[in-house]
Image (cartoon, rainbow, N blue to C red; front, side, top):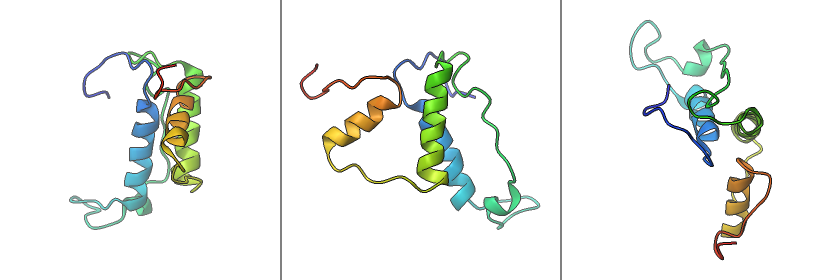
Length: 108
């Protein structure tokens, strides 16, 4: 559920939300309850993200799939590598929500 329901437009919110879930499962520990002190990864067997951001957020299904796939590649499969430069970082960021890359430094 979104903190504040709104259209997401050109954002990477789907990627960031999925990333947060994957990191929580990988590194998190239950604070209380029956599983208090247990790693979350020992308890959670599966996770579903049915159309994350595609409702009120108006994220297109292809953009949602692209961002989910990137989060899976980066944090579940361990394919993430730190960007070499600011230009590399901006390109990766933009490719999460559009099919072309603008030079943000020059405003093109």
